Length: 307
Image (tube, rainbow, N blue to C red; front, side, top):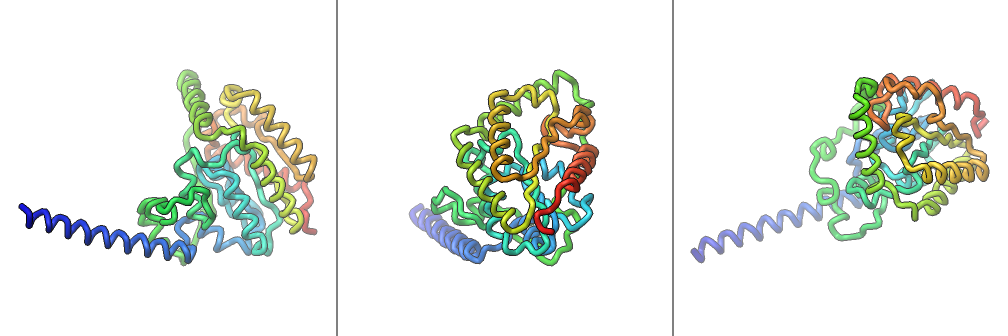
């Protein structure tokens, strides 16, 4: 029995040593700023040539089609991505933008109140973009303990040709969902946002970062285009009117101070049609085509900063 336990202990120590070596190796890769995500790869490969850059969360990931733009466009929006990450990406890479004319920055219901720290996915996004995360715990330094093991990430082919430019088409038709189910969805999504996406104490800090980045882009002759993505009108009405009012105040202050162009697509009557939506807060491919064309029409009415 004693011999058996000694063997078990020996095996345990060997495996523990292997695990330690693995962590060290992954930590070394982190210092080398290895690219683990397709979005980061897309950006790094195309940032010098891109004319339009689309940022944001899943609302623009699924709601803005870069293949419809007249010049090279990349969509770096990601699910549950705090705006802080996009602002840091833009500021870090602004010297590499050789052809950029427009950066599309969505300001949605939760933008000023969401930093990702209540959401488990934030650390992974910061890690994938090579950005410091405020949780400085030992395990957060390593890819495997922050992001898990994903073969697609680990063996990402850096020579692969990208044909999607950051967009994923969605096919669901929300007009086919019953009123009762939609009302239930409104409640559950509102509760989710209130729990993980809304911290009103963050508003002024996030606003200040956004204002700084907008001014920085303008100083480099790149036009920031501020937009608000549409929601199902019923869902929009189900959200907190006090936050709607606060958002209007913050956006109004930003536009007045920076002169950046802004378009609120929530006010466009086209999006009263629920067949344009995948669910209560995301467009489907049909809606994305409508939204992208409307956004392009808006952009065409704006002279680029660089002439």
